[in-house]
Length: 435
Ligand SMILES: [Mn+2]
Image (cartoon, rainbow, N blue to C red; front, side, top):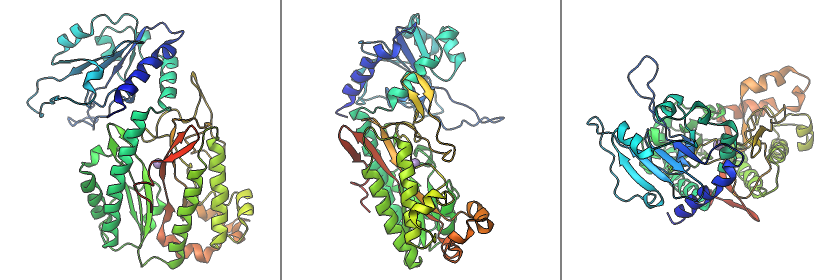
């Protein structure tokens, strides 16, 4: 990875500002530990502490990165001798030369390599682990320090953009395989298998559980069941891939010949609507405003197709788009699929709450170069949300006959991953998945 050393240099360089005014001269990032399910002896899938993953894509529990301003960071990898699992081996991963790297197999060796922790802050999940490593309680996960680390993670380095770009490329390949499986009549579970086989991963290695919904199930926003019925008329697929711990998050809606012609037209028009929103992403744009623009555009869209019997502007003004588009326009993307700090007010913390009528909006910030966000407008036929309008004073604005015809098609969502650049944006998805 060509930009990795530059990434580490950037993180090391940022540390002085990160630690400014705090009683620390360095930070120890702990990767985490395994957890049993309650009352069970089975482990839950392991997810690294994202602050650790920001430094190095070394999976597994018990590792530590120790970083100090303007010094080469140290990486202590804990690889216990264990015959239950295949041993982790290091040949020459691209990241290894960026660290003073040591591999240890016991807690004693670990402690000896770590040495004194005086002056070090600890960023990790477990206070117990921190205490075992001799950190004092007030060095553990300092709030101001964490806010600054979270904020900085929203400004991606070139290496991080490369990882998300690769993850988009990989997911795009799998989306095409999934589309083929759909077009040949595959069931949800068959489409899912086509997807993971194209990536070459197991489910636990996906950045999130894939949403693969045929027909009316597309209206369940986080539908994760995988039915065996075949020959769908609509596929809504929301699924990503991970590269070096960075996620892509992509949604497409495909129709087959058995879909209603008007729904097929709506799908294509919605694709254009999403592209136009993506093009508007730029530095200085308030994401809440773009979310509002999405509602306006969806109002016009619903009016054009006769789903609403009023003009787009009137639909927007009367809030009639809300039951059709009940989630946020997008979110930050990175190590976490819903990456951190999308509502953070400034580098030192604070929160910008979304407007009351858009409670699910995950990004409320003004965009900066280096931000990576998803743009994912949707339009669904969700009976639970439409029901109140069937009998209230807005009822006559809805074309219920058409809505009832289309509800068996579920809904439409299109989602791309967008990098905010110095003078515009770069769509990280469309080059690999232009449809
Ligand atoms: Mn998303």
